[in-house]
Amino acid sequence: MPPNASIVLLILQANIKRGKRVSTAKAFLTKDVIARDNLDIVLNARVTKLLLKGQRVTGVKFSRAGKVNLAYTRSEVILSAGAIATPQILMLSGIGSPDHLNAHGIPVRVPLWGVGNNMQSHVGVGEVIYTLKAPVAYNPVRLALNPGNYLTYLFNGDGPLSSVSGFEALGNIRTGLASANTSWPDIAINLIALHINTDGGAIYRNSVNMKPSYFNRNFNDLKLREGFTLLPSVLHPYSRGTIRLKSRNPFEPPLINANYFDDDRDVETVLQGIKKCLAIGDSPKLKKFGARLHRKPNPLCITYGQFGSDSYWRCVIRHFSYTLYHDVGTCKMGPDSDPEAVVDSRLKVYGLDNLRIGKS
Ligand SMILES: Cc1cc2nc3c(=O)[nH]c(=O)nc-3n(C[C@H](O)[C@H](O)[C@H](O)COP(=O)(O)OP(=O)(O)OC[C@H]3O[C@@H](n4cnc5c(N)ncnc54)[C@H](O)[C@@H]3O)c2cc1C
Image (tube, rainbow, N blue to C red):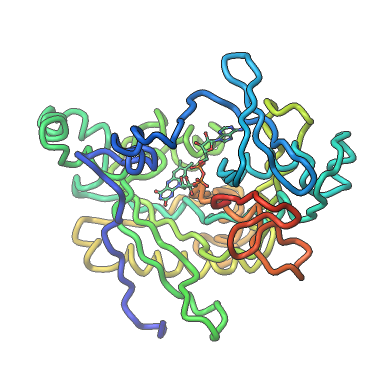
C-alpha cells in the first residue's frame, strides 16, 4: 500500500442468527444431521487417549460421568480438540517429542518432534484508545439504561445489543514491512466501539486478564466514558509458542507458553499498525464525533521515551498485549522433509495410517 493510500475498515462479518452469534455446532449440527443413523454425539465426554496398535489408531479412550469408555473404529479417527488440547491428547498417547514424553514416563509410540510447537496467534496492543464526545460508542451502561434496546433485541434480534461485542469494523492492511514478494496484508485493525474502562471495570478488565494495579494506574480517568479502541494485531507472526504436558494426568491442563512478541519483528509490525490506527482515529470521519486520543502517559513506558515516540509504543505493545485467541499451528502441516511437521497436506498425521487432525 502506498504511504498516502486511504485505509479502509469494513463492517465486521460474523455468523449471526436473530442477533446472536452462531457456534459451529448450531450452524452444522442441524436437526436432520443429528438424526442421521451413522452419527452418535456423546456429550460431556473427555477423550483422554488414543488407542494404538502398530501404526493404526484403533479407537479412543474417553471418560464420562466418572466412567472410562472405549470407542473403536475400523476406518479413521479425526482428532479436532483445538490448538491446545489436540497436541495434549497426542502427547498423552505417546505421539510427540521423545525427550518430552520420556520426561513424563510416557512410552513413545510415534516420535514426532513438532507436536505442541509452532503455536501462533493474532496478537496486538489494546492501548490505542480514543474518547468521544458524541454518544455513539457501544457503551453497555448507556445501552442497558434504554429499555427500547432490549425490546428490539428480544423481538427483532436487532439493534445495538446484537453487535459483535462492540467489534464494529475491520481492515486488513499492509504496513510496508512485509516482504515485497507477497501481496498479503500483515496487520488487522479492529475498531472496537468501547475501551477497557467503558464499563467501569465490571467485565472487560477481567476478560483481558488485566491486573487491577495496571488498570487503575492507566485507565482510571476513562471510567464509564464514551470511546473506542483501535486494535492493530499481527496477521503473520514470527513468534512461536509451545504447548507442553504439565503431567501425564489427562485432566490437568497443559502448560501454554504463547511467547507473544518474542520476535522483535512482530513488535515492529504492530508499531507500524499503531501509526495507521492514529491516522484513522484522527481522520475527519471520526473527528466529527469528537474523537480524541487518550494521551495519559503509561508510567511504565514513559521512561523509554515521550508519549507517542516509537520507543514508548514498543513498551506499551509489550505491556498491554492483546490476543484475539486465534491460536493455531500446534500440529504443524509440512512436507515429510520438515522435522517439525506433524501432518501432511491431507491433514494425516505422519507415522500413522489412519489419524487426521481437524484444524489446529
Ligand atoms: C474469546 C474468543 C473469541 C473469538 N472470536 C473469534 C471471532 O470473532 N472470529 C473468529 O474467526 N474466531 C474467533 N475466535 C477463534 C475461534 O473460536 C477458533 O479459531 C476456533 O474455534 C478453533 O476451532 P477448532 O475446531 O480448532 O477448536 P475449538 O473450537 O476449540 O474446538 C475444540 C473442541 O474440542 C473439545 N475438546 C477439547 N479437548 C477435548 C477432549 N479431551 N475430549 C473431548 N473434547 C475435547 C472442546 O470442548 C471444543 O468443543 C475466538 C476465540 C475465543 C476464545
